[in-house]
Image (tube, rainbow, N blue to C red; front, top):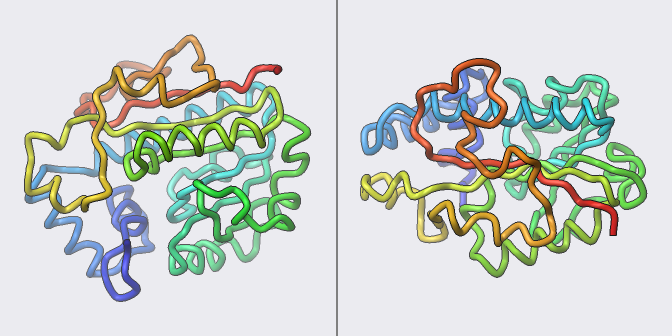
Length: 248
């Protein structure tokens, strides 16, 4: 878990995305990881591009309220910047990230930030949920679940996605990613991810979605999910999907 005086994964990603909300300790940690693995900026920019394309696809289908788990720093093309007409509730479990997010969104009436554990939707503040994701449980919404699956075992992940399926209204969408076995060949980098980190072979992804139904795009490397042109030449570190909660 991120420590208050140590590096933050959220701020490291902000650094890789070219943001401004990171500290020297985050830059040092990012450099150490790159020394063990290789350049990461292109990979995380590709993942952020996937986020943008899925959010735009949801907005085009009429989704105008989003609940984001493991939100990190709410800048650099995050949900409210991609879909400015929508309302968004960002959540995270790291108190420092929540404080930073609240500070950055203090002037917004369309996006908020609060504590939320994806494995227990009851931890999300109900007042915030109904303010920023109006109609939660009654009308279709977008759920963003990126950067989390790799830190949940199969049973917890399947249970969490099942709980979200039950809580969200029919017609809701889920944007999700999975970490592949890309780091298997980089043991030093893999060790830096900590004991909770789980790599999965692609054939293990679909069963974990439960009743969420992927679009016809399937579960594919994120750079190849509806690319605007030629897919970016980045390692297939993440696969992703946009999935639907159909009518019961």
